[in-house]
Length: 187
Image 1: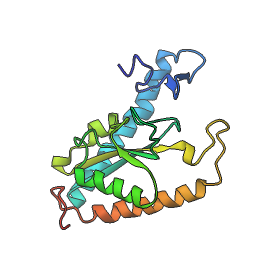
Image 2: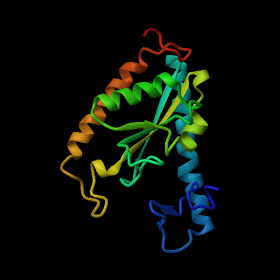
Image 3: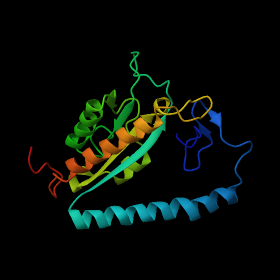
């Protein structure tokens, strides 16, 4: 369905169904991208996750995306600043997702879980929380830091970057309290 909709390995569209290319990507070019970019990227990612898991007994992958500023929660006027996607608990532990939501909330952001973005290919294929392999997708409302019409940085850009640095430090500290089996060592 994603491929037919233009959102496959080599996407055809972006936000609001805008076409990326003026013509179809030739098959040879697409296959070359898959062999030289896509496959090496995922092979490297698998190696990094495995090495981290072996060294620490768990791994946490954070897959960041930006989302359009017009995203609203279904049936409401709530416009989230962040969406934490854990594929409804199948790609990361509930504790990790709750911690991410808590940290973002404490930084003054409106953050929600799984709606409308629960996670995609990365979280689906790399998150196995029962094995200590956690993957979160984090969607960031790009209207916080960029003018979506001109694509120019907003004056708030540096503040958002600093808040994200704080958030990542908080997440790293939280993860250091996880035990090898993926459960919190102490609460």
